[in-house]
Image (cartoon, rainbow, N blue to C red):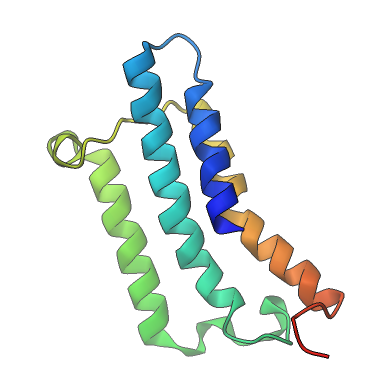
Length: 125
């Protein structure tokens, strides 16, 4: 699921208007990178419990996990915000129009897994 969402992010990045083909590819790669990494960070909260909803469990009781997720996300945003580091990683500064798309794609695994938990489709009978 996360692989398909990452592919969707890449395709959305390629559809950026008003950019050169090379820049479209760079934006697509950046979107795919951020969606892949952030969705994994968000998905970690889903897989803590296969039966209980994320919203019914104590999400903030594991301070080390929270610190690791926040630290990882912060490092990713520092990379995106700092021009010199962006050049090292060969990623593009994303147009504002793609930020909402990235957020929606990142929360998609949460919604899908929560739906599976609600319908009790978790691979066990």
